[in-house]
Amino acid sequence: MSHRFLYLARHGEAESEEAGLTDRGRRQAELLGARLAGVPFASVTHSPLPRAVETAAAWPRGQPSEVVGDYPPWVPADVPAPYAMLTEGWSAAELRDGPKLAEQALARFAVPAEQETYELVITHSFLIAWFVRDALGAPPERWMGLNTANAALTVIRYSDDRPPALMLHNDMAHLPPELRWTGFPPHLRVR
Image 1 (cartoon, rainbow, N blue to C red):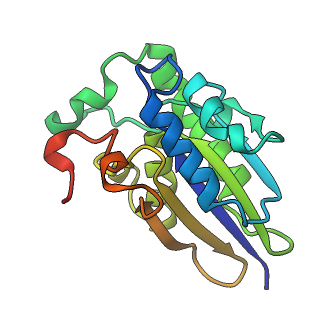
Image 2 (spheres, rainbow, N blue to C red):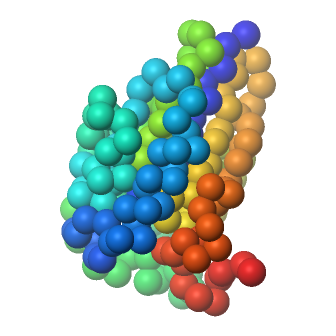
Image 3 (tube, helix red, strand yellow):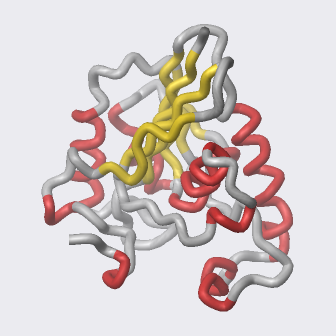
């Protein structure tokens, strides 16, 4: 029996979508790195966007990949009104190409390994939601409404003899209270 333990982390807090990390985001990234320091990662892959690159600085051998970039993984033809904001700002090409990239990400990471393997992907909230939805066998639209805080950790185990297991989701135990829940609108934060 072999397992792939896929660690998914959202980048630290950033000023904007194209900017690097804020001071709080840099501290979140440091704490994430400290928490994961003892995990023997076979690979570290990160989004090529500055906020993910900076978050991945604790792993100098990390490799950027568009497959784990920031994009909508799937959008229904008729977006439910509460989720319409998820499609705002995306170009027609991004909406078209997102599902292809999402499938490539699943094909690369959401499968068992030949031997016990630990891999880290530093990415964005949408893709983490897509992986969680897939691991749970939920329909494609269910990724919408799954949120991940900045520098939060999600772990999924992929085995060759059983369905994927969601081990952790949106875990912020490594962050002090003042650094938790960033990246969430205030009305979705849990106290």
